[in-house]
Image (cartoon, rainbow, N blue to C red):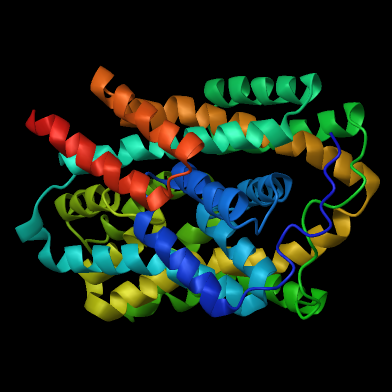
Length: 400
């Protein structure tokens, strides 16, 4: 089905403040990890605000899957960038990141008092809410991105491969396969799914961002060999953010290697912080704020958080203008139709293997998730209400 999208965003551009406030709400309510975040974004920007079409959103998600770093945070940066230029990208990142970073930094100061949060019934309710949100996203995206038999088959094939090859390499391979299948089988779309970014973001600026990304990756290990703790932390967390594919959970062993063997933090404290990271909304990469606080206080939290997200920001502003040029070609548009279809399959696979097993552990959980899904799809209840209802229902069920 041809997807005519003259403007994937609404006609009047948003201000950076508007972008910040929307992402701040998401940063306060988006529980459940990276895949769930993509579901919350779909509900907010595709279904409710109409800032993006489903095809435009899937295109952004697919591009972010190719890049190292936290896919959900990069997706937010790209939405903010296309909506309100560079200030919009910064506003999106800050709004989405700030709540969890502050919570985890605070937890590092009070870890001994707060204890282990991972088994709290209300936290399990947040995971149940994530099941409903991601299910709604898959339903909505499949309707628009898999409208015919070939693209349905693309999605099914992608889901099967992702389930049996649950690695970053398998994920990238599926996206490449989707592009090849789209190029060979599908007719090219008559328009671009994603609106061009503002002209103020020039290709020379993007080249400079990519050069800075590489320069820091090479130079920081040399500079980090000095005795300065904050510089060493910046080096370690920048490399972790630049070299990880697959999102927040995959960065855990990288960070563990950087902070435990040198004796910067106790293993028990490390695991306590990672457990707390599961209990807060927003990106898992803000685990860096906990580690930075535990190692070097408030300045450590700031340095580690900025360092782990900086590679993603540089890659986003470095890649998007070139993507704009590439996607105008008819062959590229046909490939994008295939990529968009396999994105649905990837989300479905993640839903089946990650979201459902952690969120649904009993028949009561399944019933709560079903009610929440009906509220989302039929009643169009806002996602923040679904989160609150999920936590309350799970806590009530635990009491009963």
